[in-house]
Image (cartoon, rainbow, N blue to C red; front, side, top):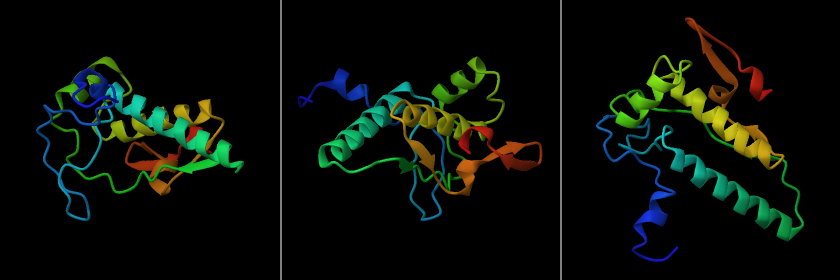
Length: 141
C-alpha cells in the first residue's frame, strides 16, 4: 500500500472514528477493540487469513485451525458507536450491543470456512447467550 493512500487505508480501517464508547480491557487498556460493525474489519481479517494460509502453503505445513481468541470483550464496547447503532437497526437478530460479539464471531467463522479452516477460541466463542443463560453455539461445534 502506498503511503498517503487514504482510500486504500480505509479498506482496512478497524475503528469507528465516531465511536464515543468508553471502556477498558481487563488489562486496563482503553479503546483496544475493533469495530465489529465496520465491513472493513472483515476485509482486514479476510486478508490476514489469506496471507496466513499462503504462508503455511508455501512452507508445506498443514493448517487446519485458527484460534480467534474471543474472550474478555470489555463492558461498554460499541455502546456509543453510530455505525453499530445503524447495523443493529438493520439486523433484527441484533437486539442488544452484547449480540455484536456473536455477530463478529459468525462473520469470522465464515471467513475461516471459505479457507477450509476450523475456528477455535476461548469458551466465550462456543457459547450463545439465550435468555438469562448460555447454550453451546450450534455453528461452532
